Length: 220
Picture 1 (spheres, helix red, strand yellow):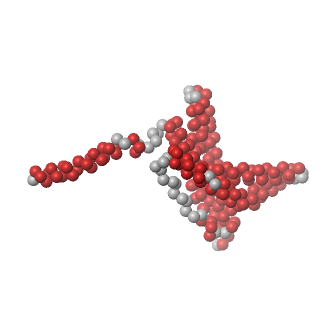
Picture 2 (cartoon, helix red, strand yellow):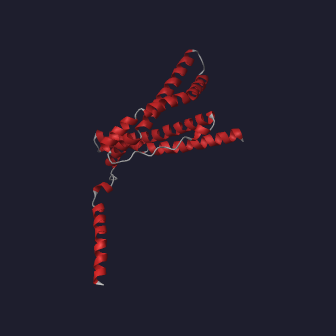
């Protein structure tokens, strides 16, 4: 009886030691939920995981804005009315959206080596973010694909833009009262960046729903 008790005690002892060692390992704590620390961690994680998506979205927005602005300028010089000019510029943006989307996607893919280098430098033990599932609109109609992308991009712009606006207002307010300018900039950047991935995923789902609704209406 004494031997069996000792054996159980000896067998359990390494387990407790391993648990204690794990609990005292600081790497399991993660990022502390402090305002500036969390914002800095969000910016670092963004550069490692979402930089390609951000460059793709920025390039798409810039090219479409340039095309719509150029169309508006030409039509105003041709003495078109304001309403007609806006409608025509919107049509130009919709028509050019698919090829611009492909071009912006290739620019985002070109940043894959940069993201690998950043991950190796700042997060050497972290695994890459899981790849997205295949796009749904590959088996849908061309019009459905355009609706999907337009709804997704519009929501993402509004979502990230609203977080950027609130983060900028908060950073400016705190900088004027208590914090140094660097801290205000960190808060202003961290607010939209920390929510970028959530806005991206929700916009993707919203675009899917719009595409399915439109295709059901046109085929039913």
